[in-house]
Amino acid sequence: MSESRPAARFDAVIFDAGGVLVLPDPTVLAPLLAYFGGDSDISAHRRAHYAGMKAKSDVSAAETSWDAYNHAYVAAVGIDGPDRTEAADALEHTRYHHTWRWVIPESRTALDRLATAQVPMGVVSNASGQIEAMLARSIAQVGPGAHVDMRVIVDSHVVGIAKPDPTIFDHALPSFAEFDRARIAYVGDSVTMDIAASSAAGLHPVLLDPYDDHVGADFERIASLHDLADELT
Image (cartoon, rainbow, N blue to C red):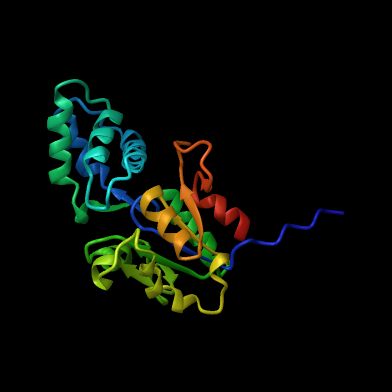
């Protein structure tokens, strides 16, 4: 007799966008930083984003402060010595909101699995007013459409509240009113923004940590959205 499957812990999942569904476009940033000796491989730039987010969290940088991120990013793609400061400055002036558009392939396929299993989903993201339109191009939209069906997509610029203020979730949670907040997972890539805000809002925080940068942390971590899909589908 086969063992019974454990009951799922979550009734719904809400995602951050940046670092969870999309990354700053490496096809833009790789040529930019190759000029300074940076590795042009997409895998190096994927890794660099999470190194940058770890550095940002380590200094508890505010949402609008990206200096630690920029320096960690350029270091992660192999830029050394005196070029590092100039490269970080170039990254600061090139990585802006319209470059947050490169779809993480495994996140996209995991969303398809969750949608097939009819898991209720949404997005709450610190952004600049572009997130809903960007996601609708290739990932997700509110309600039925060409991509994955989300109940709600909240953009901080549109609602006027940004994480780590937990009240940003007040704009999303009415769409999940039938569920206990503690049974809604919120998946993000920032300790200071995502883990802090979702915890304060009463959700279950989950950090997407594909390179194991946060070993020993006192919150839940996953390597891929497929880890959640494995549990919920």
